[in-house]
Length: 268
Image 1: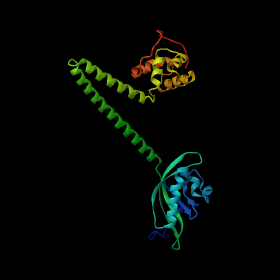
Image 2: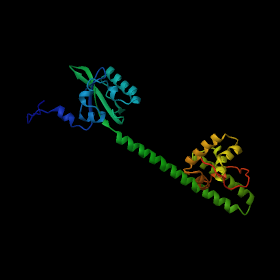
Image 3: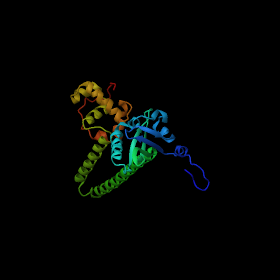
Image 4: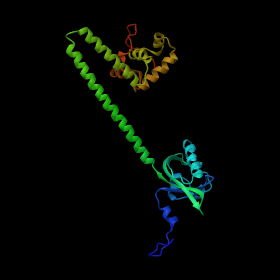
């Protein structure tokens, strides 16, 4: 095509290869007939190896159905020029996220293929995800601060009225303490059945002695103790008492009748 003034011919193939976005063409069977250099980089295929391959060869499994449906609708209605997102699965197992703008490719007034431009939005999606996570964490922190201030207000109110009704005030504090402790149990991914075992581990009982007291098999107790150590990030049985005490977990478990001994041996 002439430019007019300078009578120069544009090299469209070279121009398209300079584009940073993926440019592709797919015949009406769904097979590649063209991909530019950026497409090679994103798809992880050499252009010559991709020719004749069905488009599903570059798609992540969970993107196949939606992408093929967009293609089918485009073939049925050539006037459609949709924007949609899809996920590319590269030969090395990594993925890339693409935003596609597709349209019809005509010859002599007849649609002979589908063509499109794909923008790599992988980094944008990652940043959006990070922003969403940070926003959620910030909202959680703000909610925790609000809850803490509300608790502080209620504690102050209880302390103010302590002299008027010490027994009622003490009961209110015990109720608050129980709620806080139960919340910590959930925060560590534990459950109420772990609490008596934590109490006994903290008191130094062996797995066999714990099994006898809570009426479980020693193998079950061993598994639970290992899980408790991991959940509390206590590294060992010896660290369970300290971590559980710091977290207020020992207040959850009801006192367990002991035999007066302070320490007992026994591995995880």
